[in-house]
Image (cartoon, rainbow, N blue to C red; front, side):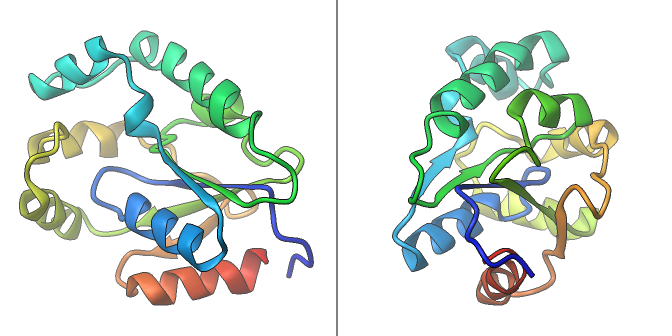
Length: 168
Protein backbone atom coordinates (compact mmCIF):
# COMPACT_ATOMS: atom_id res chain seq x y z
CA UNK A 1 0.00 0.00 0.00
CA UNK A 2 1.24 3.45 -0.88
CA UNK A 3 1.54 5.81 2.06
CA UNK A 4 1.55 8.99 0.00
CA UNK A 5 -1.25 10.08 -2.30
CA UNK A 6 0.02 10.35 -5.87
CA UNK A 7 0.16 13.81 -7.46
CA UNK A 8 -1.52 12.53 -10.65
CA UNK A 9 -3.76 9.52 -11.28
CA UNK A 10 -4.52 8.67 -14.89
CA UNK A 11 -7.66 6.60 -15.25
CA UNK A 12 -7.36 4.67 -18.49
CA UNK A 13 -9.49 2.30 -20.54
CA UNK A 14 -11.57 2.13 -23.66
CA UNK A 15 -14.68 4.21 -24.26
CA UNK A 16 -17.50 3.37 -21.89
CA UNK A 17 -15.29 2.06 -19.10
CA UNK A 18 -16.28 4.86 -16.71
CA UNK A 19 -13.09 6.92 -16.71
CA UNK A 20 -14.88 10.24 -16.39
CA UNK A 21 -17.30 9.02 -13.73
CA UNK A 22 -14.50 7.67 -11.56
CA UNK A 23 -12.22 10.67 -12.12
CA UNK A 24 -14.94 13.13 -11.16
CA UNK A 25 -15.89 11.07 -8.12
CA UNK A 26 -12.32 10.91 -6.82
CA UNK A 27 -11.75 14.60 -7.51
CA UNK A 28 -14.85 15.43 -5.50
CA UNK A 29 -13.92 13.11 -2.63
CA UNK A 30 -10.37 14.50 -2.37
CA UNK A 31 -10.80 18.13 -3.42
CA UNK A 32 -8.73 17.43 -6.52
CA UNK A 33 -8.76 18.64 -10.10
CA UNK A 34 -10.30 16.56 -12.87
CA UNK A 35 -9.49 16.69 -16.57
CA UNK A 36 -11.02 14.69 -19.39
CA UNK A 37 -8.54 13.99 -22.18
CA UNK A 38 -11.38 14.22 -24.71
CA UNK A 39 -11.53 17.97 -24.03
CA UNK A 40 -7.96 18.34 -25.33
CA UNK A 41 -8.49 16.80 -28.78
CA UNK A 42 -7.95 19.18 -31.68
CA UNK A 43 -11.02 19.90 -33.81
CA UNK A 44 -9.70 17.68 -36.62
CA UNK A 45 -9.62 14.65 -34.27
CA UNK A 46 -13.14 15.28 -33.02
CA UNK A 47 -14.41 15.65 -36.59
CA UNK A 48 -12.68 12.44 -37.62
CA UNK A 49 -14.17 10.47 -34.72
CA UNK A 50 -17.59 12.09 -35.19
CA UNK A 51 -17.52 10.78 -38.74
CA UNK A 52 -16.88 7.26 -37.46
CA UNK A 53 -13.19 7.11 -38.38
CA UNK A 54 -10.82 5.89 -35.65
CA UNK A 55 -7.76 7.97 -34.87
CA UNK A 56 -4.31 6.73 -35.81
CA UNK A 57 -0.99 7.26 -34.03
CA UNK A 58 -0.23 10.41 -36.03
CA UNK A 59 -3.56 11.89 -34.92
CA UNK A 60 -2.92 11.02 -31.30
CA UNK A 61 0.69 12.19 -30.90
CA UNK A 62 0.06 15.97 -30.60
CA UNK A 63 -2.91 15.27 -28.33
CA UNK A 64 -0.83 13.07 -26.02
CA UNK A 65 2.00 15.61 -25.95
CA UNK A 66 -0.47 18.34 -25.03
CA UNK A 67 -1.91 16.21 -22.21
CA UNK A 68 1.57 15.58 -20.84
CA UNK A 69 2.49 19.27 -21.00
CA UNK A 70 -0.79 20.88 -19.87
CA UNK A 71 -2.13 18.35 -17.36
CA UNK A 72 0.45 15.89 -16.08
CA UNK A 73 3.58 18.07 -15.99
CA UNK A 74 1.55 21.12 -14.91
CA UNK A 75 -0.19 19.36 -12.01
CA UNK A 76 0.68 21.14 -8.79
CA UNK A 77 2.44 19.31 -5.97
CA UNK A 78 0.24 18.67 -2.97
CA UNK A 79 -3.02 18.66 -4.94
CA UNK A 80 -4.47 15.54 -6.51
CA UNK A 81 -4.96 15.76 -10.27
CA UNK A 82 -7.05 13.15 -12.08
CA UNK A 83 -6.99 12.61 -15.83
CA UNK A 84 -9.42 10.38 -17.71
CA UNK A 85 -7.56 9.20 -20.82
CA UNK A 86 -7.86 6.09 -22.97
CA UNK A 87 -4.03 5.63 -23.06
CA UNK A 88 -4.59 2.55 -25.21
CA UNK A 89 -0.99 1.70 -26.15
CA UNK A 90 2.18 1.33 -24.13
CA UNK A 91 3.85 3.97 -26.31
CA UNK A 92 1.04 6.42 -25.47
CA UNK A 93 1.53 5.75 -21.77
CA UNK A 94 5.26 6.37 -22.16
CA UNK A 95 4.58 9.72 -23.87
CA UNK A 96 2.31 10.63 -20.94
CA UNK A 97 4.97 9.61 -18.42
CA UNK A 98 2.71 7.14 -16.64
CA UNK A 99 4.35 5.30 -13.77
CA UNK A 100 7.10 7.90 -13.45
CA UNK A 101 7.55 9.82 -10.22
CA UNK A 102 4.25 10.40 -8.49
CA UNK A 103 2.04 9.59 -11.49
CA UNK A 104 -0.07 6.43 -11.12
CA UNK A 105 -2.33 4.58 -13.53
CA UNK A 106 -5.68 2.88 -13.02
CA UNK A 107 -6.94 0.56 -15.78
CA UNK A 108 -10.72 0.12 -15.93
CA UNK A 109 -11.69 -2.97 -17.91
CA UNK A 110 -14.82 -4.94 -18.69
CA UNK A 111 -16.78 -7.04 -21.13
CA UNK A 112 -17.35 -5.66 -24.63
CA UNK A 113 -21.11 -6.15 -24.21
CA UNK A 114 -21.15 -4.00 -21.07
CA UNK A 115 -19.05 -1.31 -22.73
CA UNK A 116 -21.33 -1.29 -25.79
CA UNK A 117 -24.44 -0.95 -23.62
CA UNK A 118 -22.89 2.01 -21.83
CA UNK A 119 -21.96 3.73 -25.09
CA UNK A 120 -25.45 3.25 -26.51
CA UNK A 121 -27.09 4.61 -23.37
CA UNK A 122 -24.95 7.74 -23.05
CA UNK A 123 -25.70 9.17 -26.51
CA UNK A 124 -24.66 12.63 -27.69
CA UNK A 125 -20.95 11.80 -27.55
CA UNK A 126 -18.74 11.76 -30.63
CA UNK A 127 -17.40 8.32 -29.69
CA UNK A 128 -19.89 6.03 -31.40
CA UNK A 129 -20.54 2.48 -30.12
CA UNK A 130 -19.40 1.02 -33.46
CA UNK A 131 -15.91 2.47 -32.85
CA UNK A 132 -15.45 0.42 -29.67
CA UNK A 133 -14.10 -2.56 -31.60
CA UNK A 134 -11.20 -0.48 -32.97
CA UNK A 135 -10.33 0.66 -29.44
CA UNK A 136 -10.42 -2.92 -28.16
CA UNK A 137 -8.17 -4.01 -31.03
CA UNK A 138 -5.74 -1.16 -30.31
CA UNK A 139 -5.70 -1.70 -26.53
CA UNK A 140 -2.43 -2.98 -25.12
CA UNK A 141 -3.36 -4.04 -21.61
CA UNK A 142 -0.87 -2.65 -19.11
CA UNK A 143 0.98 -5.12 -16.91
CA UNK A 144 -0.32 -5.38 -13.33
CA UNK A 145 2.84 -3.67 -12.05
CA UNK A 146 2.20 -0.73 -14.40
CA UNK A 147 -1.44 -0.07 -13.50
CA UNK A 148 -4.02 -0.92 -10.92
CA UNK A 149 -6.52 -3.18 -12.76
CA UNK A 150 -10.15 -2.71 -11.73
CA UNK A 151 -13.21 -4.39 -13.28
CA UNK A 152 -16.09 -2.13 -14.30
CA UNK A 153 -18.53 -4.66 -12.87
CA UNK A 154 -18.04 -2.88 -9.53
CA UNK A 155 -20.06 0.21 -8.68
CA UNK A 156 -18.39 3.62 -9.05
CA UNK A 157 -18.16 3.97 -5.26
CA UNK A 158 -16.57 0.51 -4.96
CA UNK A 159 -14.08 1.41 -7.68
CA UNK A 160 -13.21 4.71 -5.95
CA UNK A 161 -12.76 2.95 -2.61
CA UNK A 162 -10.49 0.33 -4.17
CA UNK A 163 -8.35 3.04 -5.77
CA UNK A 164 -8.14 4.85 -2.44
CA UNK A 165 -7.19 1.64 -0.63
CA UNK A 166 -4.43 0.77 -3.10
CA UNK A 167 -3.01 4.18 -4.05
CA UNK A 168 -3.59 6.51 -1.10
